[in-house]
Image (cartoon, rainbow, N blue to C red; front, side, top):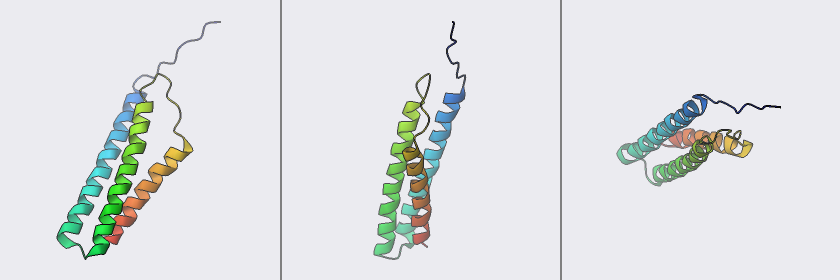
Length: 102
C-alpha cells in the first residue's frame, strides 16, 4: 500500500501570514491605547487600562507565535481549544480596556 504524503500547498503560508496580520492589528490597538492614555487619559484608571492592554497584547503575541511556529511543519496540529480561547480572550480584553479609556 502506497501512502501519499500530504501536499499542503500554500495553505500553511497563508495561515502564517493571517496570524502575522492579526498580530499587527493587535499591536496597533495597543499602541493607540497608549497614545490615548498619554494625550487624553484621566488619571490612574487610564494607566491601568493601558497596562492591562499591554498584558492582553503580550498574551495574544504568545498565542500567535506558538501557532505560527506550529504551522512550520508538514502536518500542523489543529489549534488547541486552550489557545483558541486564549486568543479570543485577549481580543475581547483589548476591546474592554479600550472602552475603559473613553
